[in-house]
Length: 220
Image 1 (cartoon, rainbow, N blue to C red):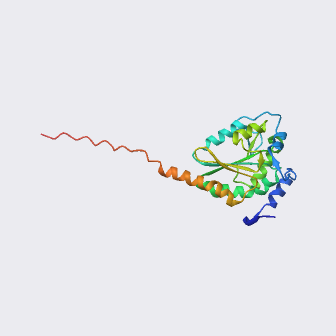
Image 2 (cartoon, one colour):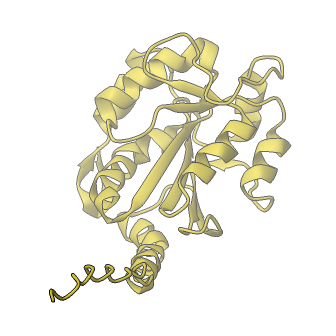
């Protein structure tokens, strides 16, 4: 199976997910399923380690902190899940985007909506094999409305979902559902150019001239 004009093979990614125990994902994916599978409303602390190698669990406040840490860079916030068929189909394309545009100043924060207790290790294994340039974060939340409100209140909760933030931390656009490389480039290219232009116009700090050396008194 190929992904349109990109020619990117996605069948190995889907097969790997099923082998890892994710099962065949539904055609439509929303936060409703993630919220139902999240552990009883208890949220992990900021950057809390789930106790298994290769992934990190954050709560909603931790997610906000991750975004604040990237001020000065363009950020693409990517929500996906191992049980979401369109997400797995798109995963190699998102991984290539992260690889291609990071040198230009793009930070791609990939956030899984899987249940960390049951699926965390499998999410980490899937990313290592299929998308090694993506971050292995899992957001843990008890209320989908809280997560949606922290990202974009207009978001209906469908995934895959991408939200683009400029280098000042302002939300500038989104793509909901599977996207093409052309759509992804259109979402972030202008933001990257604006960030580079800002850097180029920042005046260099003034450097004061050194004090002149003392003049020795004339000999009589």
